[in-house]
Image 1 (cartoon, rainbow over the protein chains, first blue to last red):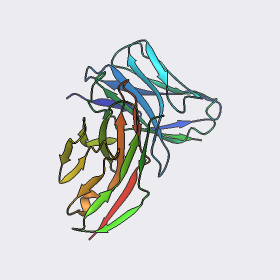
Image 2: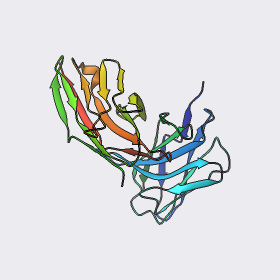
Image 3: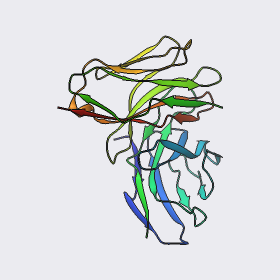
Image 4: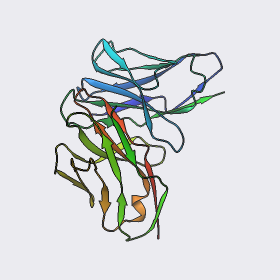
Length: 113
Length: 111
């Protein structure tokens, strides 16, 4: 089945540690996105990528980094510079251009120990 | 810049009541408009969409019409069910593939 997978479902980070969240899609979509969702709040865009080897900062990119070496994969690293990383992280993908909708993964909940 | 505004929640309705969730947007050009639904602990699912002015999106009894003159995309349902309890997000997609979400509106439907 085509879709987006995120792993792990839950992730624990220690102080000063970098952690990487995985996002993989087999929908052949060019565009991929990372959002952060805090409890009771909406989605805020962290990074997005329209094509392999290219990505743009969203509204809250500080303390995060991404790479887009393959079309199918868009991993997000939460660095130690992100002082408040506890949140629900959602990955999405979409065909490039046009009016096609985004498809979302199931999310990863990051908690700080 | 581009933005989406939604009515504040939470919204609590009795089963079979009429639902309206207001959404207005600010955007350059001609964005596509979407409503997504999120159930607890899950990702977002597309509920409906409209790609040009006066288009009506509909799905599962929900409807929304793209009103360019009022820059609005209000979500409506004639008779809500308990299973409709969720968070609803209005969103727009710009011509350069950036998607902007509203803050979400939590809906609780009680029997």
